[in-house]
Length: 446
Image 1: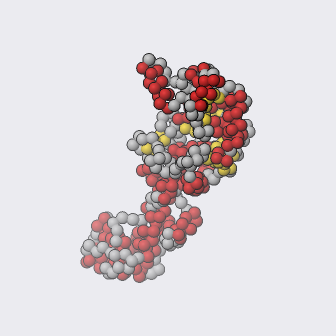
Image 2: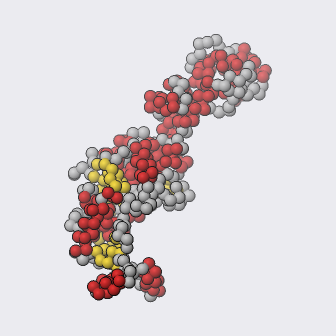
Image 3: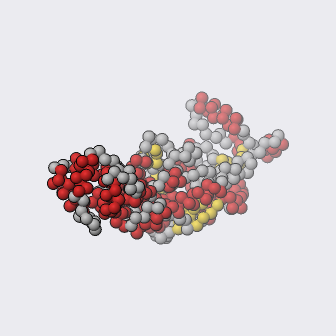
């Protein structure tokens, strides 16, 4: 098998959402596993809506996810290729001019539906003579150009869906070129796939019908088709389809919220597959789990609460050397012992900053039973403190006061941290240290 060449082809008209990211990850990780090439191709032929800021944002998102592209291309710089392909199709009689307005086409569509006929284009433009076309153009009409489909059954073996076929006689001849001469998605996509020698097209199942059309265009241009894999789409936890326009679960938003890229990647790749959803810290290991034949045909729910759970599980296992620079940026680098003490209570790395404040202070203690706290202070061990100090101290407090269980531990936690929850005090107490602990037990902010 030759090394695959794959592409992720977003339109830079907004921030990519997690559904787009699923496509990017499946392409990039498949290429990585097989030693292939991952191309980022911006489908920016819509010059009015495409924005550099969105293209830059998409590149930032891919780098953050750990899947930087090997090659970056822009369709807006490749019009000469599309023009040449269009002329080739015109010369072959496969691309033909049509002059109907949108209103006329809509009227015909409704009339066909009323007659119980499929609402497909009736190819009236193919009956026009040269004189008819000249007259229409003299009236100021400009043609849009349709690709003439062969009325055949187009079949292919899909890596996800298995054997697929589409009866092209049931489809309208697609418009490839608008009245103003600009291209719709379909032709530039095929031309680029040919020029870039794309071996595998991995994309959402909403493109299945497009595939039959594109296979016919590949053939009309004298090229073979790539291998296709149409995976299930992601939906929100409430069952809605994802929308770039509505800003659903944008990667930028997930990044800004402090989520780990590995958590996002793990859920995006594994949800809706035969693999159990779990956090995978290494993208190379995640790549090994991709099996297109094991992806479900049903839409898969991307649940933000599940994402946070995966995020927490990643952090709970995250070693200090991986995170210490980020802790420093947060002003929360209190050393490896601190990280190991608090990471089990974190959902996001940034949450460590709150526990750094608890260690360093100042903390306003909560003293609910002064007599009990005074008794506990009286048996506080001498320095130096270590991992055994908490156990030794609480046993002494229990002996002195008769308290046990929650009645013993909670008042001490409230006094030392000001909170009723948190990391194990056996690990936290030595970090707080004797001086701050004594001050807090005395009711002082420290």
